[in-house]
Every structure is written in structure tokens, then in C-alpha cells.
Length: 157
Image (tube, rainbow, N blue to C red; front, side, top):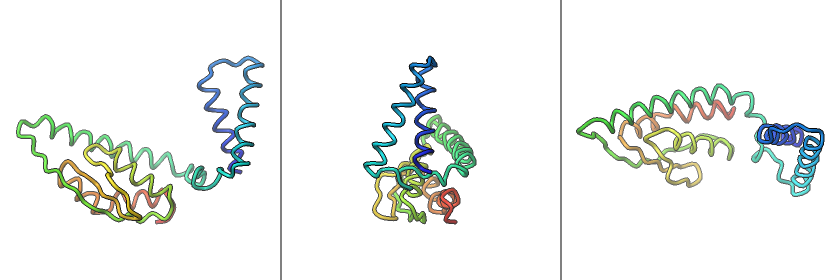
């Protein structure tokens, strides 16, 4: 199943980037995809960590939520930067990730970093070190809202 999903994704990506749909080019694209999938199968790199297809159904709602969080956070950081007093309070904090899979932990760490004003600076097992431009950003992460949302996305909450 994962091989078929990989082949479909590679072919769609190739078609989008190519923009040329002659018989010869389509045949070469299909041949290239088949060779890449066969090589990946032979190297045993098509697995649930590298291709978490079970997350595809939950992805659109998670991405929408993350986009809204990024927009809200970007607005907050913009207000901080434009304030003549520049009321920042840089803070480091450690938070525990409740995700069970490597894909879930990577999603959580990347979601923190994508949100303006926070960045994941270190990962040691289930503990993330996070820098926030203001203490309130660190407090929000410590409250666990994003952790819970990522766990729901992962399917472990």
C-alpha cells in the first residue's frame, strides 16, 4: 500500500513540475517513478516513519488549525516589533511531548518552530527545549494546547 501511495505522490509531483504531457515524456515519467519505487523497496526505506499515510486523513484540519495559529502568532509578534517600548521577555523553557511516534514528535517540534515567536532549539527524547520571544508564548506551550492538538493529529489522544 505504501509503495502505491509513494508512486502516486511521485508521479503527481513529477506531473506538476514537468508541465509537458507528450506521450514520450509521460512514459519516461512513469518509468522513472517505477524505478524509484523499486529501488526504495529494495533498500527497505518505505515504512510508516518515512511515509505516514495514516496521517493523510487528519492533515487538512491540522494544517488549517496550524495556519490560524501561525497567523495569530505573527500578528502578536508584529505588534511587539512595532511597539516603541519593544516589550519582549525572551525565555527558554522545557516542555514534554506526549506524542508516541517519531512523525508525531517531529510534527510537534516543527509546529512550534513554524509559529512566529517560538523555536524548538533542542530535542532530548520526549523533552523539547523551546525559546520564546515573550514569556506568554512559553506559557502557552506549557499549557499543552499545541501538544494536545498534535496528539489528536497523530491519533494517540
